[in-house]
Length: 382
Image 1 (cartoon, rainbow, N blue to C red):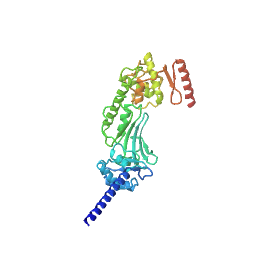
Image 2: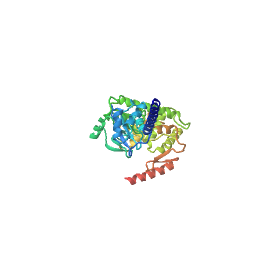
Image 3: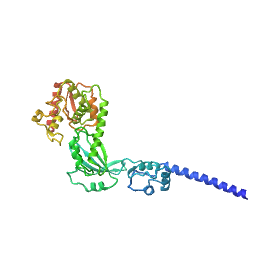
Image 4: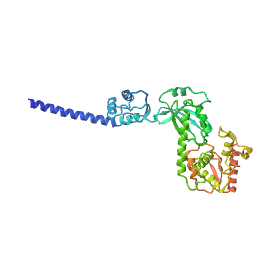
């Protein structure tokens, strides 16, 4: 009797162990298998959330098949206390394992509302936009000029929400004065920006900020990035470069930046100025004249006068020899690289060609023909 009972108990135990192992295997497969989502969703994790609350919301949203399996998987992956607040784009079919990695890894949010402050050469814009999970594209909700236009209600609403992201997008070719004035107009920032940074010392790039970030801190980050770019570009300089110091490279890069908005032209434009410097020719570039007039404080907004082209300023390369004493804008990385790695050409002239680019020439005769064509285009547009 006892032997039979023991045999039955052993059988039950073995069956139970197999069942338990089967449940564990099923749970593990369920945790890593493709999830039930048919379309992407933007899942928000508010500050102060718990994994238990998050698992229930994911189950309600149809992102996970079992909140219990999700919680067990989180526990056994040692990520129960690693939850990060933010907004996360959960793609179709995302596994529980993938979702856990998203909401515990941290870093920038991947969806939701973003407020972008675009500091451009001619204007500053604040954009309120939201990522559409279905298309993975941003939809613009509002656009205005900070400090000038009336502030839209949606901006104030989204600015107050905890999961809204803020970003400053600095365009290539802006001046340091323009950057400082733009930062002053951004009400998401705090503090005095301090003394205007030297021209050319700020890196055109994208900068994530948080409400209350100090303006001087933002400028310091912009300077740190530019310092690294200058060092890297100088380290990779070509023997064909006409400039002899990183400071000269920065000045030439700023002129290249202001002369062309066509990325493919930077190396060719750089070759023109390199050839002129090596031959002892004056650079004769309009953007330097403009900087001598404005000192980088705003946009000229009109054509140059003959008196300004002839006027003596430290930056007027029609009357001075070589490079001006300072940069005339904040150049991007590609212009820095072009300044010390110019294309190999014999060009010493260029003029606009009516397409947004330039026509280049080796001789004055050829250049004069290009100028005549450009004047015909100008006359036809008036």
